Amino acid sequence: MSSKTLAFAVIAAATSATAFAADLPSRKAAPAPAPVISACTESEGIPTDAFGFTTGSDVAEKGAFGPSLTYNGGYGTRAGSSNSHGLTLQGSYGLFPCFEIGPYVLGNFTNASAGGISADSNALGAGVEMKYRLLGRDMHGIGLTLVLDPSFNRADPDGAGRFTTYNTGIRIFADKTLIPNTLYAALNLSQDLTWTGPSPYLRSSTFTVGGSLAWQVSDGLYLSGEVRHMRAHNDLGFGNEAGYATFAGPGVFWQATKQLALSAAYNIQVAGKAKGEPGNLDLTNFSQHLVKVKLGYSF
Image (tube, rainbow, N blue to C red; front, side, top):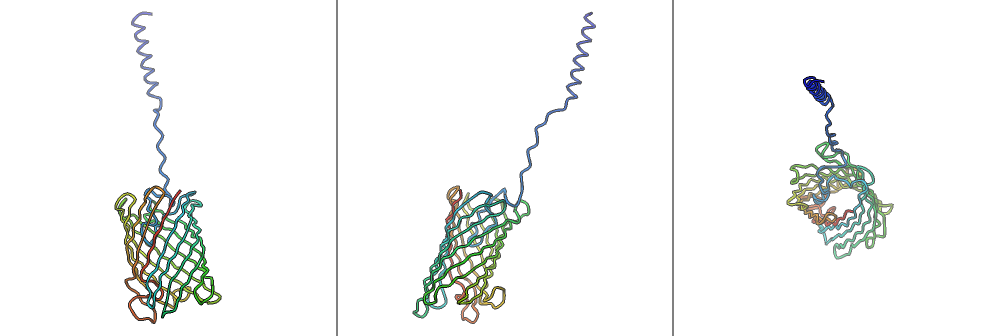
């Protein structure tokens, strides 16, 4: 083979190899899977206790468990004195996606007197709080959770014998991010139904609407301010009104560690009226001052 023929053969082979390589499909990196968005998970979580007495909409993730201990105090009445102290020990568990169950036990002691006569009472009880997340903030702009909370109390007031009270709370918790990582809003609606009897035979209910703003002042530290309006009725519906009260006050939430959280809130009755009673506050159906302190731990 001549040198000229050899040169043409090399050029042809090189051209063919180049064309073959150009025909091969290029390998591209597989696209990253899109993040899963659902009502059960959020890109930015909001602590449920960051709003004071008002509650956020987040629920425990599936398999997550956390106990909590809550103190609730009520002080101030129209006639005489009344100081109420209650403790609730609860364990909350994410049973399946979007659903949290929280059984609890509670105790309450009330130190009261009227006209020099003691009206002290104590009570023990138990219940179970069930939450189901309907809407998520990432998907719908707001978080929305439906709550059912049945419980019972065995009360022992001085001079009135022992009796059992059955309660059912039906609640809606909603919240929204106003400024990411800074400002949040929450709205709660609840109707608490109470059966007492057969002796004494009583039926009552309390309707509550509350709103709160929470400001994250630093990582894990929130300050809040809320307003709540409550109406008491002497039946299970909205008739036979017994009185109403409006409360306002501040709150604070501190995520002390990854697992441990502390929160506290104070409400004072700023307006109200008890049916058939004098004065501008309802101190017959509601206390004048309310305090809540909660210690929570998550595993």
